[in-house]
Image (spheres, rainbow, N blue to C red):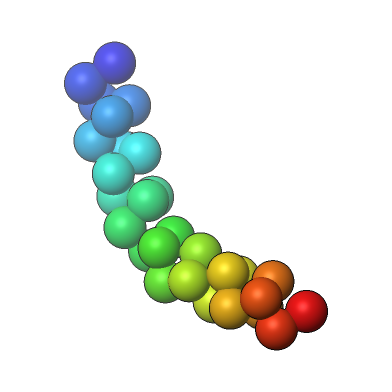
Length: 29
């Protein structure tokens, strides 16, 4: 589980940037 959590954090790090873009897109839409 610890290894999975570490991987999740690494995957979540680059996600926020995309999530922000998605949120803006959703608002614009």
